[in-house]
Length: 216
Image (cartoon, rainbow, N blue to C red):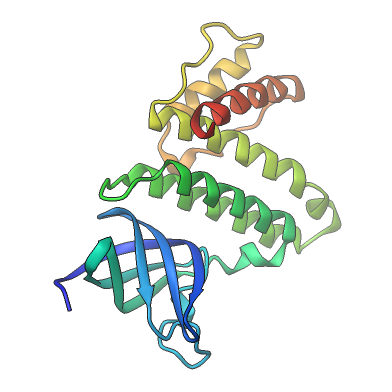
């Protein structure tokens, strides 16, 4: 068994491996994107069941192995992001975000900003899912709030990854202010703004171009 290392890890994908194990792809603070073999994680009584589901965020102790694959030795769950699974629209949005992060992240290239951006977006989705359970009115707002979050996420992702040049001029001043906020604010404040429908339409157009620049 190789040297043991520690990291914080967000599981972006989890696939069955053999009868009782899983192969994880995780985004970590210390190593960027990594592959992790989690032996026994598919067992209902296994010690790693709770922290090897998709979207689980944990402190992991890993053993370095061959071919760049780590082996999970110990795991301490920080946040399961369980609320993502309570609303299908939210869950599908979370999978879309995870797919984008899997595309842009790289092995052996730590990117704490990307990890923080992903975590903050998942926190937003969880909060949205929780609020949607409290009233019919809030439930009806879920699709528009999801689109808002994805719009903001792709603009910040493109900015942080250096993939996109933003417009020099905007149709609305509010859109320019929003882009400035998204690209420069602390990630804790990323979603803390609102726009008129017309400014939001312009922001969505910018986000679609940003998304294409990052993923195409």
